[in-house]
Image (cartoon, rainbow, N blue to C red):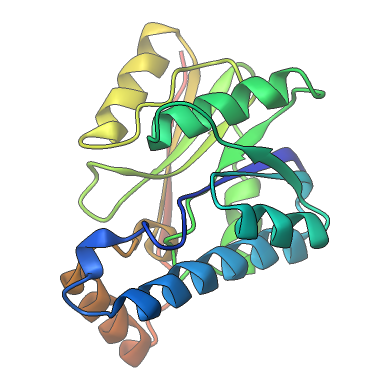
Length: 213
């Protein structure tokens, strides 16, 4: 079991802006809404998390999460992913602390079985488990054994940035590779790749690498 799932959510009318070439504004809002609700329900239905915290400026997202027994934090200040996550981690630190899985909502291939598999690889304390994106530059999931271990550095080359932090702090590290979690959706090319993955119905390929001091 993991104590917390931390799900950051951009405003539904602002997320996935690089897909505006493919979707209309209304379609993009519906896509962002569907991705958020699907991710939240998979986390909830997995039974692997004691609490789910949603951090967002979107009051509709917070209202929906609250109605589905999630905990809600209205994002404030600078509108960046790392700021939202820092606020969420600080809130968790003052509300029981414990282990935290940071999980974005743009993982359309994510399944409940993927969450079971990820939870089975929890690192020793103090530790970090990280799932990179397909090209192993970004971070698609980040599990911390406590919320104040590292500073969130999502963005370009965040996989390397998070691993460097863990090495500098002598944390137990697990790099977990999972085809479903590694496939995010940011660009039209990502959409095409996801459609091909569905057609091929390829099995999950999971690999664990341990980096323990």
